[in-house]
Image (cartoon, rainbow over all chains, first blue to last red; front, side, top):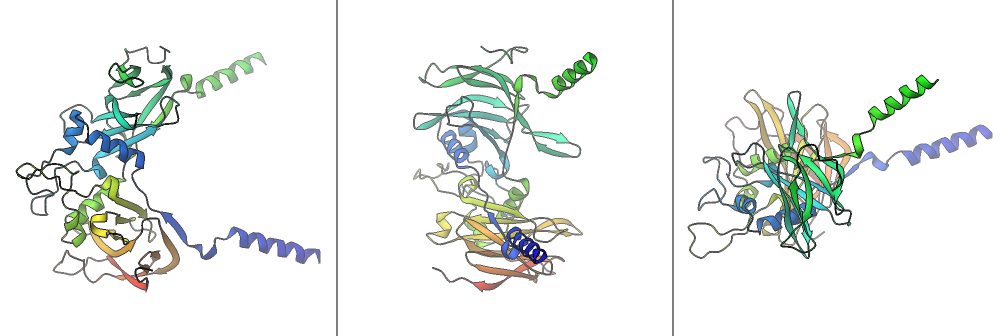
Length: 189
Length: 191
């Protein structure tokens, strides 16, 4: 009697642990909506990087066909990296955008987009390879978030340097980044 | 005892990150997905033709009317998923073109891009066309030729060896190992 109760319990446990039909439901992946929003704001701005990624390099006939090779225009599926984090703890994330477009600079250019009012503004211009070499292949690189803060805004380090923050003179309530001198990254300002 | 305590403190100090710096990784669309999308765009497939104008709406130099042409933007209109369809083969890339210009109010068109290894190297093959609303796709436990069946809004699909590559005709037909999906249960729209 006791033995069959144990067997029954084991059967119920097994049924509960086995997924029905062993099918897998997968969610479609997308570029995060916050990234899309920040990118769109940059595209619509008059920042030089915004203009660079909206420039049509394919001439009157947009999008090249097989004979002419792939399009030269900015392709976010292969030329964009992003990172999303709340730098100032206000519950509204900032968005780091990095563009793998030919610029002739040492590392791909990027921006930190900050929400401001109903829209977005460029709070910082940076440069970073976005990738690090591991053996024979490249893996995503890292942004280092430093412990120091200015007016609640967290300092960070990328390839182009370490950055702190100061109030933006032209946008009340907004911040701009400033490169930090070497050796001062960890200090609270 | 004191010596042991000192060693422990040293070990703890070495393992803690200096002043709690954090590392934030860069993200991006998986390079395999970007490559598959690029390969799709180079075919003569009707989806490729539709998404060819490939830059954000902007004024094109040389056009007198100054009109901005709406175009396909992968950040806004692409849904994707890398899926292990058969053990030991490269992952297949599910691409869903969720762009109202080509889908209207109905389900969006999608393709499965398969990487086929040939003597000439790796090349992409359009293994399936389907439609979906972009919420989720279901991998079923059944398989044909080792390839996992799946279900999307347009129906349930199985697999068989491909006899041709859609809209990219090859003199010798489809490459060895290329697959094509077979609709098993089709959904009528509106469902």
